[in-house]
Length: 77
Image (cartoon, rainbow, N blue to C red):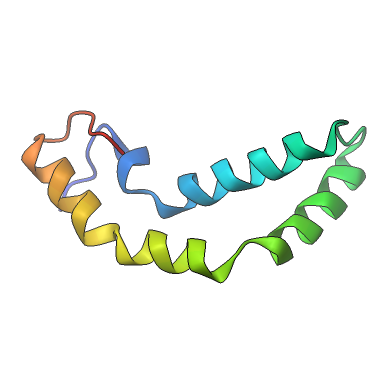
């Protein structure tokens, strides 16, 4: 399958990054250095709920079908 132009629609990591960004927003302050960001990301990755990962993986066939139906254009995902 050629990679469609709207590849974020079928990139499962995009959904995990969205969760991580929301988790970072809850802190109220941002990491102030690359090392602090790395430490935060390592801790946050451990907090990602397995249910989120399962949901993203289980939803991949639906996402791929939507991208195919949209002929590579944007989808609701």
